[in-house]
Length: 390
Image 1: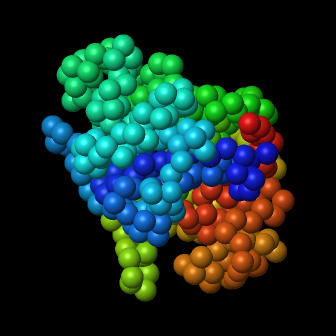
Image 2 (image 1 turned 90 degrees about the vertical axis):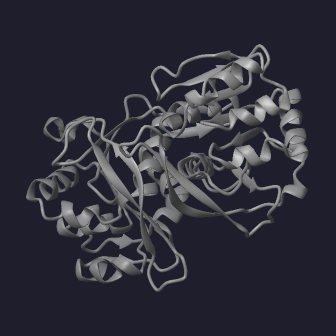
């Protein structure tokens, strides 16, 4: 099953300052959850250095807005990269692609992956790297629409992304308009890497959120589970399908508590009034500040209790445990908890496990926060009976 160990497969990710926040973290954490080693490098930085990320979303203007995202820590050195030792290459989108598109060392690495026929995943603007490497001629491709003339000039065939949540695959090259397509992107990448997914038939997961839900904690499970073939519905009690929840970015930046910045807008894909507990195998409650709003709604607390009464898998990330506490589900249960929730877990009768980022106690799963998402997702798919074999 999905695990954190083994290093059975390995992926190289080329990063840089102002890469798109979701486009680095979603594949990074989702693949780690399945035991894939993901080495993240940047040509002008070393392991342990940080890259600034950017949030790209539409905030009411003609073009996307760029907001500051999380800081992302590199875990490998570009100078140590041996392309032959990896099974796939990922290049996130964002403005850093303009810089590395003229870096000959980067282009040589890309060419080696292309010559070996290994999967290359691109999103948004990172197709520019493939254009600069000279490997787009005769290839079908999509991306952010402003790249259409560039793809055509390179001899490629442009395809409009319809719908925006889908990818284009031509040979070994995966292309997408951007982060909304991550579920399809991950599904294709896993297949190209030889993954066989078992036990995912008809699995359905409900995500419960509201405004200021934690940016990573809502989107990474949403896309990762979708990439494994699960139906994933995200709802909010005061909003309808197609409406947005604004997310919050919580990042340790040297202060006593994490900073909070505005993140992406997360689009709900289901209606609260149509939710029936019997239609789902699992409930996921992300953290952030949205649980403070949700816990004031008796209908929400009742829904959480109903999942427990019907013996479903229930999980809470970070401050999502506030709803679990209000529903009376932490009494006598072992929990993973960061400092923000320790007092609440204790008063709710739970036992926090200091050394663990993610803890399963029966069908209750808890995680400390977004840094624990790889092991949380691994534990969650185990509880759901999903098996991923390469």
